[in-house]
View 1 (cartoon, helix red, strand yellow):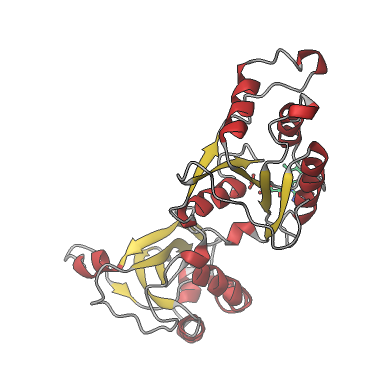
View 2 (tube, protein in one colour):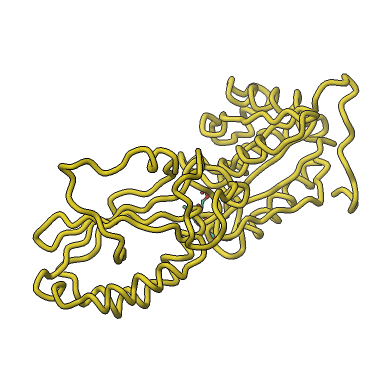
Length: 308
Ligand code: FNR
């Protein structure tokens, strides 16, 4: 493995450094693939990050085919050979690296003496919904790469709680600019800023709702105190049915606010409901679009009350 402080040197060609990105997950909405995409977006002009999509096509490693592999294996070896460095993002499966990623490394490792990974700088990162951020899987991948002869970099990134780290566009939420101050004072005249909206349909027990103003007002006050809360629209569509649109500065504010409000929701609002609250939709909205599209005369009246 490389020593601490080791850096990859620029290619002698003088062009950008070509970094081959390999996601160890085949999943369509993979957090690890999103992590590599985010890395592409953040890379300096001196580096060109190339996403490799051939993992699924690789056959299982068979030593009998080692010297006469099929086109998928050739493509893998060639992609690695052409790269100045590799960036691997791996999930953790049962406390280890995914089988297909290990399979790819096994194919790449042969013939052993002249394998394409020998001396190749490789950084391993990873993401997982768990608090460990696939750290164990990354450690195992580094061990495998070192055994193959790669120049394994000490750079580490274990992205924990991956399900909370990306916005609806797949960008790292920490990099998403927060268009509003983290308070409840939204400015409807602010141009072209985005907010995160959550749309829910709530079915209330109409008889209880008629006497529930104090509970609704108390819940609204708690909502308004949440960091990043920008306000809401609640449309009463009759028969105890309400559609609530809650606006937050960022998706992360929305998630944190929802979590903080859950105990109060159970205490104050759920006793008033005749059925569970339904999530209808969630995502970015543009504030200036909201400001331009005022209510029309044939719309139901809107209030700015509670929003579970
Ligand atoms: C997992 N997952 C998991 N997570 C973890 O932190 N430690 C583990 O040991 C495992 N084991 C495991 C085994 C199998 C077979 C699956 C399918 C999943 C959960 C895993 O981290 C989660 O599904 C990630 O979201 C997978 O990464 P991608 O696909 O989002 O990149």
